[in-house]
Each structure stands twice: as structure tokens, then as C-alpha cells.
Length: 513
Image (cartoon, rainbow, N blue to C red; front, side, top):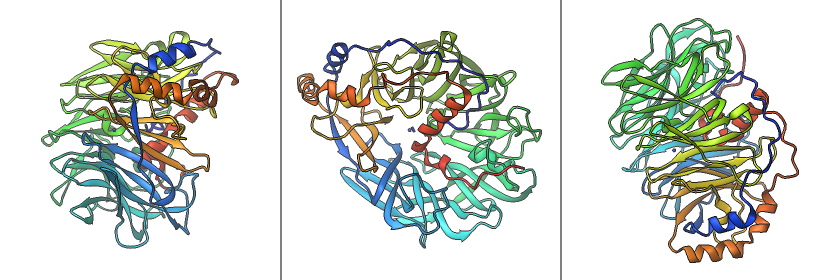
């Protein structure tokens, strides 16, 4: 799966990004290149009556899962369950073959969302249970499974809360984290689940595996007290992150975080590239593939910058950069290809990349965008992501990149007259189906499934009829001044793409020790 949480990658380097000359395709080149791609049928997944639909997962059959706002106002509206689209209850859903199904919640007026789905129809996610949490003072939320028309609380490790990773496999194994009953006066527990800026006294969180009604504590690394499982593959191997000690680092104010690989009861420390913070690919479940390879991002010694890495069978490899000081892994597919983003020489631009067989390829950007980010890929060499101006507020251009070709704007590949201007390319599955989103003129956020069609001629006509000038003009960022990519701007870019992964927007109120 986009979908993209970015707030966990802690990079403190000042990445100076000067104004860059236009390096994208000309109008004629872009139109010619777009015509070479298959056209797509554009399907609106619909809503549950509210103003927004968000997707976290798509499987190989084209089944989509996520969360959608209903039309029922949420009177509490304290923030964790809501975006700027309004205070409405959110329900988990799945979409298959044109049917959007409201999966509901645990009994009561609660919020829920789906994190992952498997090919057997099980949906894994989280739901409020109608109870207040006595530790954190928020609505209690617990990992939940929807299966055979029923919704069930999967339980915790003795505390009141649990939280899913973005992953359930076809064996019904699902992973995440749950609280136990051990007090956590230092407050580092919530930070391992929700990010380094959330520190509040409470209880400890441990990586958790749920299967067949049973719950298993996967433990932690070294002397660490908290851990979080992010992904499980079809072989039952698990990857996640764990504290390795209890000593706050000067850089982040929390203990050292290392990625881990778990198999057959053993948690293996993947380690870092020398820094005190490492994590899986920012696309959550996309950090572990079915070969047992793990991709992620780690700070280097001194915690001043970070590089993407790949780990396999005890070997940790720094993937390097596109010539700059920073790179970030988004996801890894079953072919062992990693996609993400990296700065180029002199940190002049931030570019989407594909790493394959020891080589990192710069995927470029669209139009005059200085930045691009790759989120998801399949084994066919197709990659989706966003090309963006690095200045916050500019329009995003969702892209498709295929097998050594040039990046193409997804908006030029959808039917003319749709009235839709896509602004994010989130996921792509093995069938080449793409999940993308758009913010409509009325402010609603809709998610779309792009289903590949046949015939280049039809698509060429579609591009021409769409009016390439109009598409580019409506999205152009040429009037924007590209300033330096400061740490603050980098953090804003991360937050901009975090909506795909709803679990990272759902957290207790921020606090400090």
C-alpha cells in the first residue's frame, strides 16, 4: 500500500534548495508521451454521505479499504478522528466491483477505519469502543477485524488501547501494537506508536500479532520498553520498530529506535546506519515484501540526515542518494525494488527515485516542479507518486512512471470531460490499477480507482480532448517562488502527504514530559 506517512522521519539537516530552472517536459513532449500510455477508466468510489473518503489499502483484485466520513455530525470533534473536511463520524469501508460497503463500528456511536484487507475478505483496522481511556484521557480505540459480516474487538495486552499496522495477510495474521498494564512514567510509549512529538505518561506499547482469536506479544529489542509492528507478509514474517534502550537521544528526546524483523518467535535488530532513529518505509506495510526484505530510512551518525536502506538476511545496505545528502524509502515490492525520494547534487532538488539492483534512478518531475515523491510500485515496473512544488500551497501533479520511460501526469490519462483534477497518486497494484484522490470544488475529498484500458489511440484522443493546455494551466506552479527547503518546509511536505495513512492522524493530544 500511500499510502505516506511522513512525520516519523526525523531529519535535522538544513537542505538548502535554491530556485531551479524548468527541467520538466515541454507541452508537446508531455502530450506525445501521454498518448503512448493506456487510458484509464475513472471510477469514483463514492462516500458514506459525508464530505471525504480516504484509502489505506488496495489488493491484487482491486478491492479497496479505508475510512469515509458519514453525514452524522460528531458532537465531540476533538481532533484525532477528523480532518479539515468537518466533524462527522468516520466509518471503515471496503469497495469491490462497484459496491461501497459501510463496515460500521464496534457497538455504539463510534469512529472506525480500515487499515488493510486480505484476499479472503477480512478487513483489519481500528474502532472506538465507546469507552473513555483512563490513561490518556481520549476515546478508547482498539484494533478491530470485520469478517463474515461481523465486527470484533481483537483485544489488548492488558491495557485499554491497541492500534493496527497497515497489514493483514491471507492467513489472517494481523499486526500492530497494544498497551499492557505496565506504567510508563517517562511517556515514551505513545511516541513509538504515534511519532516522536507525542510524549505523555501512560503505559507501554508492545508489538502485537493477532491470529485466530489469539493475541501474541512480540516483545522489544534489547532494553527497550516499547515496540510497534508495522507489516506482516504472507509467510508470517513481521517487521516494525522498537526502542533499544531507555535513554533519550539529544536529537529527538526519545530513546534510540531501531527497525526489527521478527520470525518464528525471534525479534532481530536490523540496526541503523549509525544514527539513533530508523524506521520502515513511510508507506507502512510497504516496508516488508514477501521475500523477507525490509526497506526503510535511517539517520546517519550524528542524526543530521538520513538515508534509505534495504535489509535482507542480516545484511543492511545504505541505498545512498541521487547526489545529495538525504534519501527516504517509501516502499519495496516483491521484486526487491525500492521507491522513495532523495535530494540531488548540492541538494538542489528533491526527486522521486527507483532503486533496483544497486542503482538508484532519478524519475524526474513534471512541469517546473522542484520536488517529486514516489509512493508505490508493482513488479511490472510501474510507479505512482506526486510531483510537487516544494513551496507549500502549490498544486500536486500525480504521476505514473513506467519501465525507464518519462513521468506522465495521471490527469492526462483519464477520460475527457470527467470534471476531476486528481491531486495525489497513492497506490498501484499488480494489475496496474491506481488509487488516486482529488479535492473537488466544493471542498469534498473523493478517492478514485483508475482501471487500465486498452488502445493507445483511444488514449491519444482522450489526451487531446482533455485539453493538455487546460490541465497544465490549472495545475501550474510557474508563478511560485521556490525558496529553500528548510526543515520546517520538509516537515510541512510530510504532513501534506500524511492524510493517506489515517492512523498517523489519529493520536492522543500532543504533550511533553
